[in-house]
Length: 293
Image (cartoon, rainbow, N blue to C red):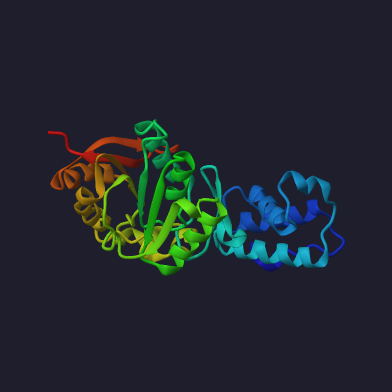
């Protein structure tokens, strides 16, 4: 159905009518769960939550205009997090921007794995996050390990600035530093925990990504080279000098890459001690440490 066949409701229309229009517009654009997304967009425009919509009957002129604009942006497959400017991750609400990948629930698998391998909340004192993006992994870890401090590194200065704002938002700016740099090139010292969610999409698969990702998220954070493993080769090579003797590294991986990681780890004197699946059953996190003799 073309947009002009979906007439925008009149000014006198109530919220239910507007939500019906928004849901139909998003359904037409093949957006998953269009009714819920229409409600989320309306809640954002009205500055409330989903429950707060029940207390409203109609919108003001400016609210109607804002809702129409938001629905049209989402119908063009712009990510919800770019429209609202925020995304939830672990226990945090983070600012988002087109400068970084959007924090996703699948990445929470890395935090769950870390908590299982480092259950003593006082033992972890230092955390490094390579390719920190919005800062989600580092900040979630610091929120769980109250004695730890951390460093996040991203090659994009805008991403490092965003991560720093999120550290302030989470009240963790005193225990974190966000740097613009090329992976670990400017980092010295060892860390109890090393995270990374590097680019891992094979170049040949980029064109087939969902338009929400392909057209709106930064290619440099997606493109993993011909086989998707370029960043892992570099990172596993750097890990022996970054990871404490009894530390753990937790990396996010793409589909099928759990089969390649053991070889890369062995070449650098590391070993894979676990591979964790996300809620969809896809192997998502590899846990590494120095190889035991």
